[in-house]
Length: 99
Image (cartoon, rainbow, N blue to C red; front, side, top):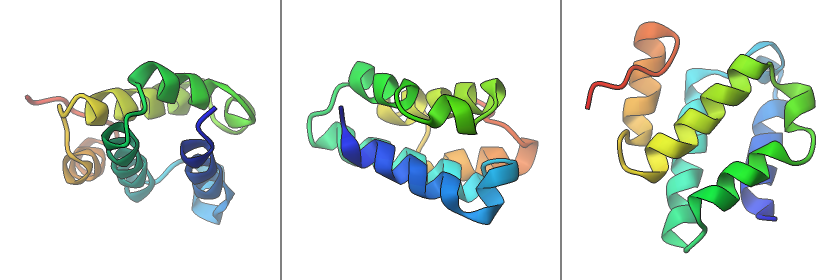
């Protein structure tokens, strides 16, 4: 299990803003960490599996969990940069895939 991505997600969830809903900046941080992990050779399937493990399911709503998985997929594949993730979130409250 990739401890780093799980640790980042747990830290993000521990802050007060995350208890109600993940912020756009937190989605951007997840995108940045995903790219960093990808560049270190971690596979997409492993990153997605790490999200499913641990307390993620208990702390996130199904919608938030799906959004985290989407952020990971699209940032891993280069569809959206971390800045684009934040911008799309701020503009529509969710990811808007324009590419």
